[in-house]
Amino acid sequence: MSINNFSVGRDISLDIVTGSGPLQINLITGFQSNQESTEVKVKGLDGVTRFVRFFDGWKGKFEVERQDATLDQYFSQLEQNFYSGIGESAVTITETISEASGSVSQYRYLGVLLKFDDAGDWKGDATVKQVVSFVASRRIQIA
Image (cartoon, rainbow, N blue to C red; front, side, top):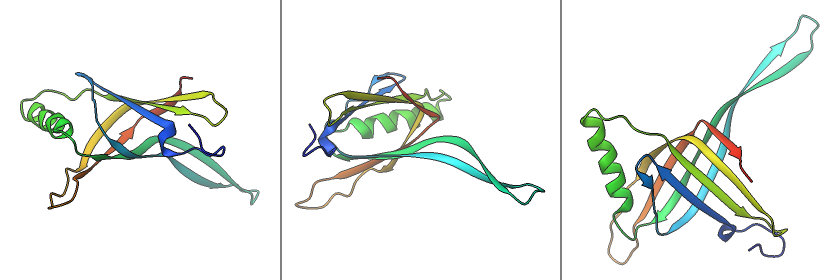
C-alpha cells in the first residue's frame, strides 16, 4: 500500500525459490537491486562518439532480522554439497510490487546465485542482522 502516491518498503514482497524448494525467510527488512551493464565508447573516423551498451545481469542484496536458522542452514547445506561434489542449482527471486495505482508489477530474477555476506553480529541487547547478496543473469517482467 503506497503512501501519498509514493512507493514504500511494504509495497514489495519477495519469493525465493531454490533447487530444493522455497526459501522461507521470516523478516526481510530491506531489499536492493541494481542493473549491471557495460558501456563502450566508440569513436568513428568521422569524429562522432557513439555508445553501445551490453547488459550484464543484475545484482542486489536483502537484509534480514534473524528469527531462526533458515539462512544458516541453507548456506551450510550449500557448503556441504560443494565439498561432496554436488552442483549448485540456480535460484529464482520473484519480486511483487503493489503500485500506487492499485496495479501489481512482478519481476523474476533468473539464474540467481545467493551469497551469505553477513551471518550476523551477536551482541547483548541487540537483534542479529544478516545480509544476503545476489547476482542474477536476467530480470524479466512477468506481470
